[in-house]
Image 1 (cartoon, one colour):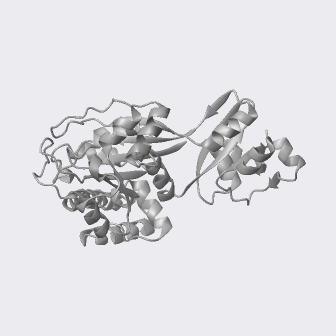
Image 2 (tube, rainbow, N blue to C red):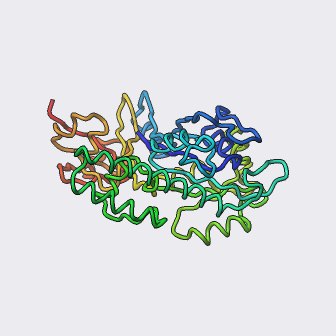
Image 3 (cartoon, rainbow, N blue to C red):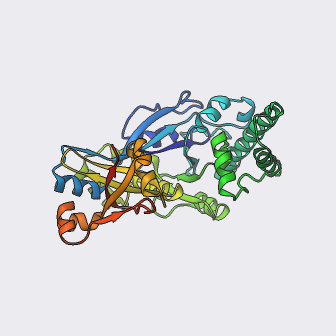
Length: 356
């Protein structure tokens, strides 16, 4: 279990190159013309976790299963997408299915690669994406309100939609703060409610310190998560073996790959934690929301585990690694018995006891 992240942006900003790098594949065609990507490319990537590696070794597990993240490379967006321009309808339908959105903007000059607007302006690019998302959501809400005449929505739901519509018509895309209201809007597929990460795609020379474009993006989006990546360099890194990769990254002054940074920011953005199960048959990482109660965490393994939950036997990952097994942790007083009100912590190693 993991999360799904859509890569969106205008044509020719490097979406397919970044997708290929993140997924260590060559599945997405990268070329210098608009709408090179028509149907979405999908890649599932393991979230490599050294803690799981250690747990698996200590338990002598037959299988090791990482959590994963799914990347979706979506067709380029242009002005008028909400009205069907370019490949707008396909773009908008595909990003409704993701958990978070990577807004990729071009922050490099190049005479070789054309820009759909004939100029490099990442702020304008972000505004194009934002505007089309707002217009699309307005259209979706208006259709929902029309259907409400047939009594498909409650009074409360109608009010939420009306408030959201009012905000969108004012050009404000994320004013809703009530958690239940936001959950309802997300379940409807409203794009403006989806969490996002802005990724600035730069050239190699500006990867470490950025440039005038990245500084502009950061100054205009101070409340957003922003990462600077060179998609071409990421693509080169992923084509190397482990030792070559580490040497190359040291030489260019890069401490983490773009993939690792995106995973970290994605987990933070979506408020996700990881817990583990570990035994002879299998060691596995499981992804849950922060502050998840033990029975709900158990349901990630099997839906019946939540209603049949008895207790959880919990060990911190650090203690498991220190003492070498759950049994040794128990002998040293480090294994805890937790009930239905226990909030699972990141790094917990859990053993669930359930009614048959």
